[in-house]
Amino acid sequence: MVDVEASARNGFRPSIADSGLLNSLSSYSALQRMVMRIDRAVKYGDPRLDGTLAAILAESMHDPNLLDGCDLTPSCDRYARHLVYQGEGYSLLAIVWLPCQMSPVHSHRTWCALSVYRGWINETLFRRAPVGAEKVAERRLFRGDVSNSPPDPESGHRMANLGTEAAVSLHVYGATYERLGQDVNHIWTT
Ligand SMILES: [Fe+2]
Image (cartoon, rainbow, N blue to C red):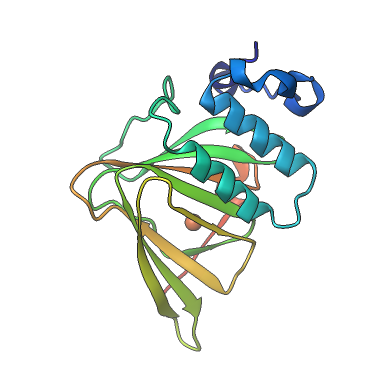
């Protein structure tokens, strides 16, 4: 059996879709099944990939054992990013947010999809303005709620844990983990 969690820790990237393992999905954990579906969507070039991935994430978030064995250690310094799985050209991350931790306002240079697994996250959406950025919406994302976008330099967002308990969100980005900093987030100076 392919152990996705151990595979992620070891940096191993199985070619799941090619191995015929999809024929017996019931014998795999929720995390393994989710990764197999993400693998397939990415590999076969879904035209609305970010939306498809968001739907896959949303369907998985209510499994209480989804992230068993994953490192969800928080950090007092800033929100903590943990690689759950390194796919072919994409990364699956768990982000742990302590109360009051937040991201900077940023846009994405690649597609992305996220869903909340534990707690809740406040997401503020921005558009580029002639000077700085204009806030266009704000919403609370609870377990199973999603946010997703294709690459869009004109749209930004800020994620924040405004609750009183730690929150965990799962994110899929179209870049390998070592390139996340330079290939994914463009930090806005608002
Ligand atoms: Fe983001």
